[in-house]
Image (cartoon, rainbow, N blue to C red):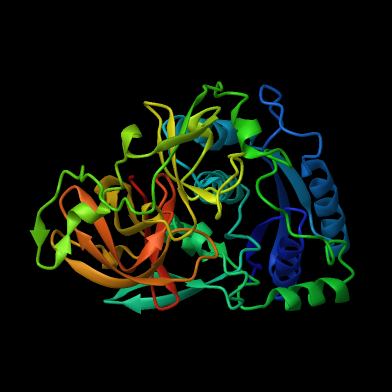
Length: 398
C-alpha cells in the first residue's frame, strides 16, 4: 500500500524539523513546505526580520532529511487576513491575537488547502499539542489535547480549529518535552538543534508594537488619568443586567470610568496603541508601585491607569462573547439556551487554567470566574477546557 503523504510546515525551527524527521521515521512520505508570510514594503517593519534565515534553515533540514522542499508565498493573504485585521482591531480599541489568527486563517486553512491540492493525506506542524480520535454516540470525534510539556503547551493557539482541520492534521511532537525534541535534533545532526525559539511574528520583527502601529494609525495626543485604588464603583453598561439563578450578567461589563473619576498624570500618543493590563511604555513615574492600564477610551482618546497590580480596576468576575463568535471544537458539547458547563479556562497563553462556568444566553455566552481575573482584554481569545482537552473558544467582547 502506498505510504500516506504528509506535508510538514517547515518553519526553520527545531520543532517542525523534528516533526518532519519523526514522520519520515514512521514511514510517511514527507514533503517540507516553507510559508513566506510577509514581505510587504508598504509597512516597513525591521531589517532583522528572520524569514530569509528561517527559509535557509528549512532548506538545510529538508536536505539533511532527504525530503522534497518547496516555498510558497502567502503574503498577500497574510496581509489581508492578519495584518489588516490587526490594524482594524487596534484602531477600535481591541487587542487581537495574531498567532491564533495565523493558525486559523493561514496554517490550517490556506496551507491545508494547498497541501491537499498537492495530494497530501495530512499536514503536520511542530505544535506542542496532541490529538486523539474517539467514537462518541456512533460519531467519530477528534479531541485536541494539551501537549505533554506543560511549559510549552500550545493548545491555546489552536483554539479556533474545527473537526475537519483536526482530522487532516498530525502533531508529531506533542507527546514530547522540549528537551527531548532538542536531543533528537542534535542526534540527527539537524542545524536547528540549538536554534532559539522565535519570539513573536516575523513581520513585527524586533520593532516595538506601538512603532509598528504608528505606520498605519496616526498618533493623537490624549490624557492619562489615574484612578484612585479606593474607587471600586463602576457603572454597568450591560444589555443583560438581570439575575438568573446565581448569575449576575452585569459582571461581564468592564469598569466604565469617566475623566472626573481621577487625576490627569500625563499624556499619551494614542489610546489605540495600548492595551488592558499594560505596564510598560507609559513613561510616567513618581508612584510607589507601577501604573497599569485599566481601561482605554478610543472615542475620547483617554487612557485610565491604576497603581499596582492589585488595583480593583484590573480585575473582572466575568466576561462575555457574542454568540456569533463562539467556536466549539467539540460541536457535540455546544450549549443550548440556558445551559451551563463547568470548565477550566484561560484568557492568554501560558496563563494557568482557572475554574469557570459557561452560561449560554440568546445573544451572548457568559463565562463566570471562580476567582476574579486580571487584565481581561477585548479582542483576545478565551479558551475553555474539560480536563486536558480544549473544547471551545471565543473572542472577548469588551
